[in-house]
Length: 395
Image (cartoon, rainbow, N blue to C red; front, side):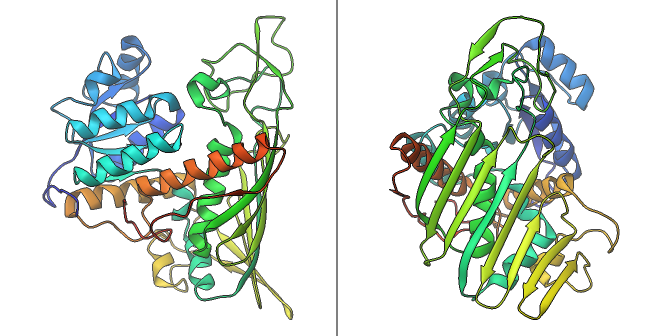
């Protein structure tokens, strides 16, 4: 049971981090009925600029001040990865609800501590695995219920770090953690693959590669900003986080699978693609074409298009526009934040809302990938989640 505020309450929102994803959080918070009372960034000057740009009522000099502030009910942690655990713990200690960007923590110990704390304090703790909120991903989940899953496979490919001039704080191990490509985007693929299929990855074997061994030292560059092939002979730094991860796995239900994760694939902007193959039907979802679900059978193929009039009820909830009016990533984020705020207001966690336990699940998968890769691709067992994926249970 979570502590909650009244249905009519206007949630006061504080956001730590004012980059690309912080702005996404701010937009969704407003649409969900939140009041953006506070923002903190890398410096007080940056926070003042962000407050003006995003319409926050107040800029805080530091993240540490914001997470304990009296004028904040829910904290959105959008800071670099190494700050997630200390900021989330401080916010929970101060009685706040927390939305924390992934990875929830840099290791299982940190993630487990947060799962235990949020449960003990009766707060809502959520992680933005927002690809769950595509209507056609939910439609795939409904079609997969009770099916004999044999194979699941796919890719998550980006190109924004494909050149030596491309850089961002995520590349630096001390800020982003031991894993980059898998922790950053492979975790999203695995979360959606497990969520839709209802099966957990039980064991895996992985190889990783760093194909850009040195990058221009521009860690302050925003995510997805292009640096290019030549930064003019400036300072460079060695890279010790992976650009590519190749993972093969087996689920607890006996299905086999594989995923290729890359942040160095030219021309691929954000291609999260998954196929689930059952005994009589295959389903494929492509995040860059989210209005459709591909279905294959022995006697032909079909494309299911997003239409609230024909979708199953659990999927239709996320089809907020009529058929033919495209929805996208921002709509998914809006729906996720709305679910979290509903949980805070009512004390009831909506089915499928990704919580801290789902964040810990992603951390454990990441650690298994790194352990396997360090062992030359040896098979590694993945600790099972304590609850079925997508139940909304926080511990």
